[in-house]
Length: 371
Ligand code: ZN
Ligand code: ZN
Image: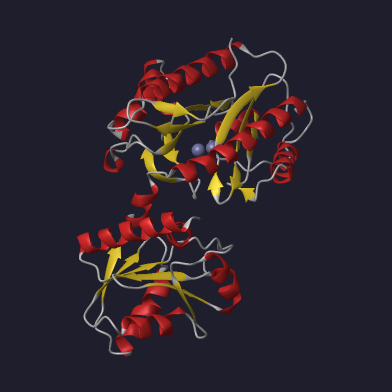
């Protein structure tokens, strides 16, 4: 990531710290660490850390261990890299010693309860007068508005994802299992240049497609049954997220009805989303159509979610009042209504939309069935 971008993110973070009356901020979340420092290491398991950031008004430190030293030195220029031997605690306390009586913000979403207990105990035992201040969504808030560089990476990831979807869709035939199709998707995404998956592909056929999230298994594709495919490449850290629902052979009457309804809900939302709109209202654009058709109960998830370094991030297009937020230009969200009928299956259609001042730009090029 360019130095100028990192510098401005650091400045934005410091402005937030000052607003909240924080003297220091401990960044423990993987995507936030990458966003602020440019360090691309990513934890494979939850309880292992590739490092933390400690940001104060004057200092920006990346605290990590020997395994990541060279890697971090190659990627990180705006943070001083400090290596710990005996874990994060001792080094953190040493650094916090310069902030007597300070308020230290930490990320409740990422610092585990065990880690928090160990760090606070060690700090207390060392006689540090530090106030630990829980924070939520500080860096995530900055990440909501995408820089053009980030949008470019998402576009690349989505273009590859759509290309691979089209190739795989053309090869689908009865008898192939969900698992075989999912592997074909992964293989082609990787061979096409993806650094990894944004998430494990979902291939859900027949009655399994009534599960919005499903692990592909041995179920074989069959003609006349809905098949939901939800997939995304990760390129330069950035995720794509695409869903299409297909059917082999003749589309049944029910499939045509549900598919047409879901697409109408999606197209209506895509035509109406724009900056300044509340996310509740955005969700309602699609939801009202599905509710009016009598399928409200069968659309049990949000209309969409932000996408970036994480495949699910803020803002959410959620029907839950407590999550209501105002959409801003530069938000990148999915638009993915779905209808799921137990025993029959489901239809979900997912595009990616870049929110702009007076409209939403749909980044997808893939089309839809027209019945
Ligand atoms: Zn998806
Ligand atoms: Zn999604």
